Length: 307
Length: 307
Image (cartoon, rainbow over all chains, first blue to last red; front, side):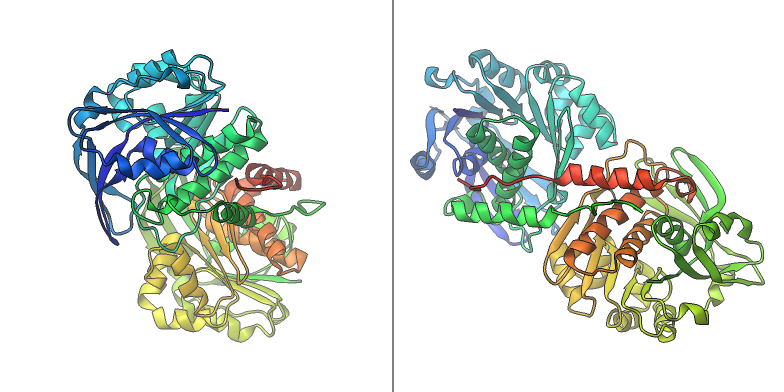
């Protein structure tokens, strides 16, 4: 049940009210892999410059991230820097330097082309489609996107949507893509254009899973200290996809559990800068937090509900 | 298990992107009673001017709202008018005319003073305390408040908090009251000041119940059309309090169910102007939506959770 991720591998400089991290490990494929590999092996495809501290990724390789698809190109690595507002609800990008990422054209190694579970991190829809042209018979394809692609690559994004099983976006992106403010309407609009499943992430307010049969709400985990929100969405994707890859099931019950694993990994991501929290996160801690999610949401209706 | 509500009975003029209602029935006690009385009898205390269309409240009396505490004073009724933004997430108050409400000093009729379940709608904390001085031995007291009282009656509000079991506020109010942006910290701050229980309402994002033992998240109900958000919070309070009054239990399991009834009644409130939706809402519709809430949130953990 191999799980493939294609996305950015970057160096992030992040400032939050709690401190600053410089040239820390970042990028969608990095956060995804750091989270997912706690549950399931991962095959990573991405590109870094010859300045990248690849040694720092060794711990990922040790726990089952196959880095055979991580290309090193001559030049600078992708760098992003940003600063968060005091309440962490908004951030300003200070600088984006694409470096070698500007010419990234994902090449899927032969041994990855039979991947059954595929996550297309937030990159140009043309490149995401290029990945789908290379994998042979995926069982399940999920993708992310962002405001930039919704704006400048709308048609290609719609082409892509016809070929994916799940779109995973935040509420602002769902609204922008559909032109609908109401999220239920936005969900219908998006699912009418291809994806059988849709996840709308709402940050601290949790995430919603739409399937053809039902809607499922996972709350945000109540943290007293959010240290750095960077990468939470990709860690969520990692937890979600690793759980479906591991369980192999696509019934609503499987996807709901995957939502909880996504929420758990996303919540751990923000407890420290970069992928730091995933370095020593244990299976027991993950398990414990899934139980807390259950405890936070469970209720019984009266046998004779209503009046 | 008598349930008492003290609050405003007003006439609202509301403009939303979907239309306009003029001098429609409004006020916290009105919304509370219209919702609660679908589940349990209510005793209402409030004041209206001699211009109030009290006939329009007859349907409430018919279904168990005891209006013996609704005083009619010479003068104008409390009038509020406001306009909602296109996305319904913000509203501007155009006018507030207190009328006879300016001199409101709730007098609890003798036959209401043994009320076991008491809800203090959003009025001056001095008046809320005045109510508590008149009721004899309530089993459970809940109260609402607002930014104005947090600002100008802070000390009295803190006095009140020592005497209530549950505070029910929205996220902005919880933050303002506690001075904490993080809602988990805000909750601790508030519960350290008296209330054993706290509900933080987050509009479309649902509501959170904090008890000494646990935290419970109820999602917002996904409506395709929100017609008029006015009164949703008071309808929530009505559904919540009516369920606890009816069940008589204050265990976490009881309060969680009450959260769902609150969410259900709050969600119905916004489907029409004023209290219109409650006029023909049936027990079966309420029951059906509690089941939908269950369906939207239920998940099973793997027997052997985690990796």
